[in-house]
Amino acid sequence: MSHEFQVDGMSCGHCVQAVQNAVQAIDPQAQVTVDLPSGHVDVVSTQPRESLRLAIENAGYRAT
Image (tube, rainbow, N blue to C red; front, side, top):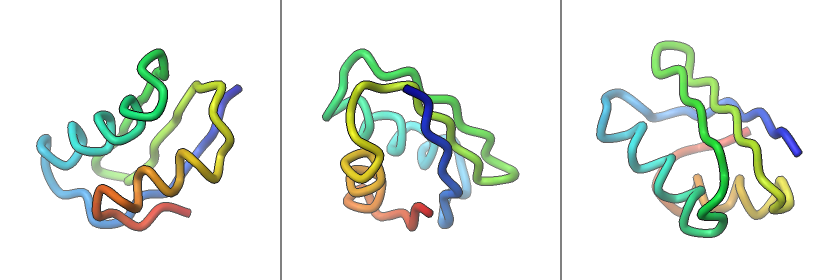
């Protein structure tokens, strides 16, 4: 299942890696694509959207 998020607060490659790691911590098989300039994050995962959003927010970013 594909999920799209708008993630605020990312400013560098480290931020991108932190978001990817946060998602993959709850779903190691997840495919995470991040567009840093726009803050757009696409996640292909079997996990519920809310779980993915909370993982991103627990990493320190605002996800909508």
